[in-house]
Length: 168
Image (cartoon, rainbow, N blue to C red; front, side, top):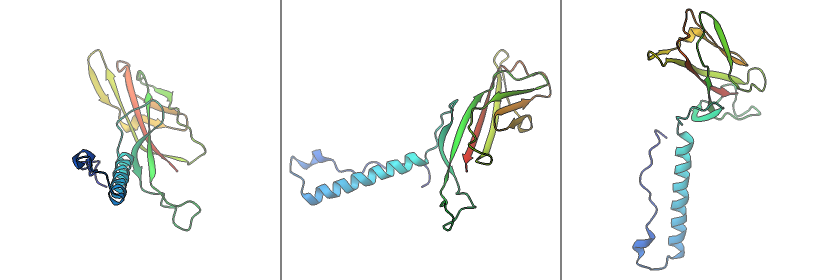
């Protein structure tokens, strides 16, 4: 389903009936229309990308293709994999050093999670100035996000790291 657009409701307006009773067939048809409307709303909500950046794990609404190692003959059937997002409040960037901050993501066992997007930006609120953190400065392991700066970036006192991942 492309996008998240729904047309206006197809539910009939009961007021336009001039106080006439509904027939059984009309009621059944109306319930079918209402059920279809609710199904459409559910489909749209399930495919909507949510723009919320929480400090805890959050399902974004995006999905990734099914695990290519699964098929109709495997114990687990292939299904789309939801994307999760965690925002890490990294704080102040370091001065020509590495700084690690816990990301809080639980790895149930090795190889059960795959990072699909790592992004960070920082703010110097005094100047003001803003930078995107180069990918080569950022490392993520099972416990921490580590940013290694090649110079003094301590003026950048606010840094947020966005981690998007899928669970396998």
